[in-house]
Image (cartoon, rainbow, N blue to C red; front, top):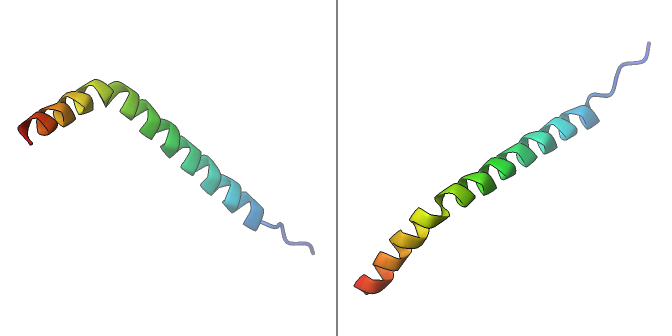
Length: 47
């Protein structure tokens, strides 16, 4: 008789996926910050 509302559930799943991607991006930047800093430093010295 009553159909379950899945619209809110889908929105929550997208929010969880987006949060997971954000956490992974921040973690990757933390690990690669030294390498990124050295690359940008080399570029700055070349200019």
